[in-house]
Amino acid sequence: MFVCHGNICRSPMAEFVMKSLARKAAVADEIHIESSATSREEIGNGIYQPAAYTLSMHGIECEGHAARQFTVEDYNSFDMVVIMEDYNKRNLMRLIGCDCENKVWKLLDFVADEPVPCAGADISDPWYHGNFDKTYNEIVSGCKALMRYLGY
Image (tube, rainbow, N blue to C red; front, side):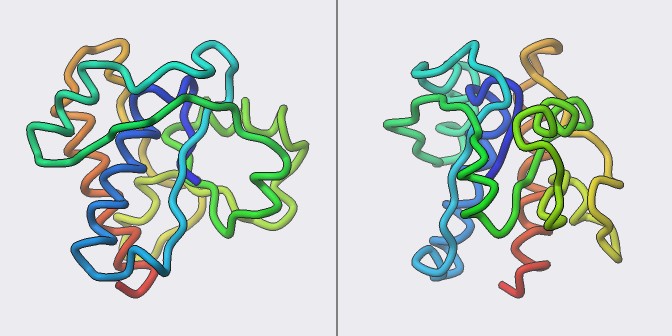
């Protein structure tokens, strides 16, 4: 489960990049991939248009996305919860109480030689800086590293 603040930019971008990588590696049936938000602000909204456009420029489809909030049930059912930045972790802990099963990682944790949960850099937020290409490149780097971490 990829998680960001509103589930309209970074986490859905990561979801669809990861789904694309999984399809290319012929493991799409082995990995269940979703995304969600820590906030309720964008519930039901589609992916933000500049994020969708950036994905489309790289041949990645993102049809049918609707923002939703992360739940305790999500924490219980997913093996990994991959956040975009430290701010997401603080908000996620308000929703779930604690990461008692050590499932929470930051996406860029996986680019390290020896990944450590929540020790990596933040994925930059294009909502504020407007550079969706920069965010896309960071997400691709993190997702490729996550695929390697998972053994694919």
